[in-house]
Image (cartoon, rainbow, N blue to C red):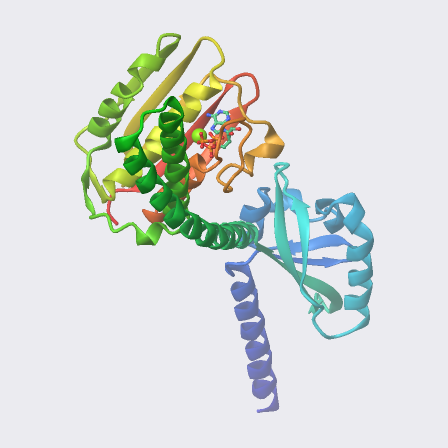
Length: 354
Ligand SMILES: Nc1ncnc2c1ncn2[C@@H]1O[C@H](COP(=O)(O)OP(=O)(O)OP(=O)(O)O)[C@@H](O)[C@H]1O
Ligand SMILES: [Mg+2]
């Protein structure tokens, strides 16, 4: 009887261990168990995450995946984990995978018993997406607060300027003077800038109706507006999947593409080429506006889209803000690739179903 009982107990222990093994092996989180820095075990998610084979990874030193400057912290944490029984505080580190790519991770370390001896179980959680979202939110918050301040100022200035413009028009009815025309034109420019500023800082206020838009048609017509500026610039329109339409605010889009094409033209100093590519893939419309212009230095790339960022003496720095706001408002994405001296490509993706 006792023998049978002992057997049952052993069987339960065995089943528990087996279950535990399976939970770890098939966990969605990458898990590594190590002792004295030597990796004793890695689960399936782990091998996928580290981009290596199990037999390649087991036996290697866990410290190798960390940056040189972070190794002392990791060693100290290993010491703490081996000395205690509690999980350690979660920390963030950059690690290098077996294929050489770097990624930011959160580390969850817990002392465990592995093969009768104490070891450390480390869970690696990829935080790249969360970090990117945080950066984006930060950027958008910054944009929003700059936008709010700017919109307030614009609103205050717009009203008196509009009345000055009205009186100037009245004056022009009774007097003729060349200065009056210059003043009128300059005022028009200032009011235009304010209108743009209000538009980008409070895009929700744009009471434009949502309509069906065929970008191939709109982009072809838009290019006609630039006819007179195209003598030194070759334009290639590669408009595929021309039957595709999406719903959105057409004037906002026209203005956004106008701004992109204007920037592309301004980036070309003498001769050059602008290519506009349109295609449909997996439920998204892709539009790429490329130029062979001066390009954007790497450190300036992240400034693109920030209100008032401009390298031009007469630029307002609101063009790209309008572009980014419009694309975001329609649930799309925009990325920029640029090489100084070679050119720039703006890649826009818009969901077909919104
Ligand atoms: N295609 C491009 N090639 C190189 N630099 C670019 C390109 N597009 C934008 N930039 C850079 O980004 C800056 C901001 O562009 P944005 O359109 O917002 O303002 P701007 O062109 O300077 O002024 P505005 O649009 O009011 O004329 C530009 O001044 C330029 O330095
Ligand atoms: Mg511009």
